[in-house]
Image 1 (spheres, rainbow, N blue to C red):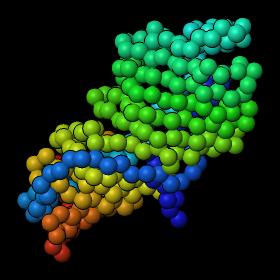
Image 2: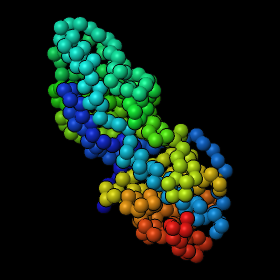
Image 3: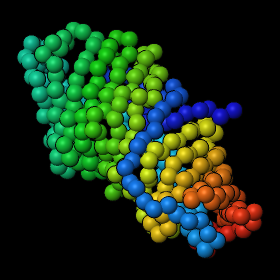
Image 4: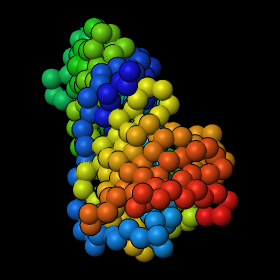
Length: 301
């Protein structure tokens, strides 16, 4: 039976000395809204192969976002010499440092990150409420912008929240933006990511199958079925033919060297026309359109 999960954030959060481990356990997530408006595609036998690839690329991007989303391991913020010296030693001695600049150790290739500590912070309490502001913070691999707030009884029960505000991460030329709150309970072992959504409106993506560039229009919903396959509902804009609505069922990636799906189906629709793509294996797929089915080899794409 499928596990109904709309996931836009997953991972493990751990911070030495302050934050316990956190892994995803709750189910329901959200969708994202984009603002692109493109002409609708007209599905024909001349272009349905291109549209099938667009549907596959859109599904792949959505599932990659689901499993490789916003970073949740912020342990490095607590491991800097600035943090350990000022946050622990000075605060124990009653020295109130309201803003800590962690840039030199976190943003090693440029940019900045600062931590803000509230006036009422009690070093003897198990509760914390810290905010971190990133400004083009480049660690040599990713560029981070925006704010996170970490609060709760982290040192005690391990129940805490992390809130993302205008938070984005850029890696390999792709920017992912997040907002909302993740809530961790049960000693930090169970985390509910349903309050976190991902904005894909600015994350145009290039396909690994045919090297064209695509974008989303409207909401993007992903369901992790828990068996390595996903369901995806989205509108994908093909750069040559226009937008199509895609409904992917049990689509699976990860075993094909070209990045194409090896299992599952996608139904594409536009302007009253519908076609169904069935992914047979890493070598081939078929398209059913107007009651006729044609099989194609990926090597010919």
